[in-house]
Image 1 (cartoon, rainbow, N blue to C red):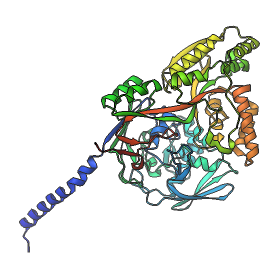
Image 2 (image 1 turned 90 degrees about the vertical axis):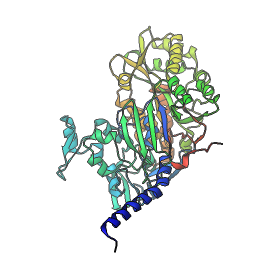
Image 3 (image 1 turned 45 degrees about the horizontal axis):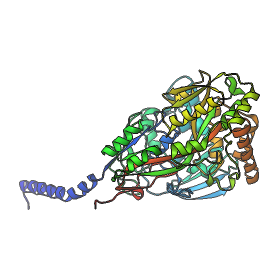
Image 4 (image 1 turned 135 degrees about the horizontal axis):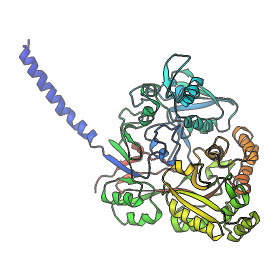
Length: 550
């Protein structure tokens, strides 16, 4: 029998041998790189909750943290659907879709995803819609007591409910069938139901992770998802640091740490890439592409995305109340000159607020208003314009080439005789401020699923951002919004969409499309990585690898 001292020596030697055996595996894991991505912004709301942050920049980072039940093949321009957290789905009836959940999916807190998490993700409580939540919010409180359970819960900011209302206007509820099966049930037949389940904003959250957070903002700054990377540090306007989640159902992530660093200035992003400080940079203007690609170790990738750049009008202020003034603005813009001069022909002027992947809902033959300065001057004369100032608000290159585009357009407006008050602003709150006779601002509009409801309804109908901000409304247009969103008759929906374009882009302009947006990324050439027209940056193993040195 081994005595006590010998047992101790044996245990020490065994532990040492085990450590030596484990070292290669640990070293291999530690050899995964840290990847630094320089971005112009991370989020615009200070929150990492998809029902609060509905921005282009948020879409870029969220795909690493969260996942939807159904997704799209993001590197395919036609965006075919594919399974994600659900492995199969079927239409039970004209108001019900049933989905089978993927087995063994782990959240970042170690909990296994079940139907309960899906039900909670789409619950009234999550969106701040329970009566006691609404009452608490009105009183300025951050918590409430659930009358049914007696448990204290969180009060989301009011913007969450607004996003829900425009994202899910016809959703009645989500119910649990069994631990791995859920049903989405609509209030009435919804032609866009499946698209909404797959859209940005329908990502699945951990119920326990949400409840364990000390406050709604604590949850929103370190949310618990199922993606390949988990949040370890977030400082708004500064950095978002993610770490590999090695229990990810899709396999071990290829990157140890993924850091999104805010670098607002284009020149600083480009210089940081070329110096090796950053591995990727976003929003490279076309005039910087040759500067990057002349360096053998770097390249630029990207192209047109599912997002259009717009100029948006406030019809309720001053001379902007006259639709002829807004019509004149739409005809004063030389869109092709902007595409050629600022984009080097690397993007296109689309057929209004629509995308090719709308399929049968695409309105053939539709065009943006033609560039015609003489017609614009004639419209101003008919409107009786007398030199009144028109406020034009612009952010500092939140969008690629934003300032240059705005300067070109402002000069074009002056050429037809408009008195443009050009104002640079620091943030979206200043852009949207109702004070100061706001009239024109920059914006963009995305189509997160292939139906016009995803764009024109989501942003310009009564629950959309433009009408919610009090900039524009039109009675006939709003009636057609309901038709487009609820009718199950294809021809009726298409006719409604066409008439909506006629109203919002020609007769009573709410906005005017400038060009299809494009994103170009500078990156290390030894990194194999494909960009997505959905604006997300995918750093999963199937879309990221580093070529070995020659």
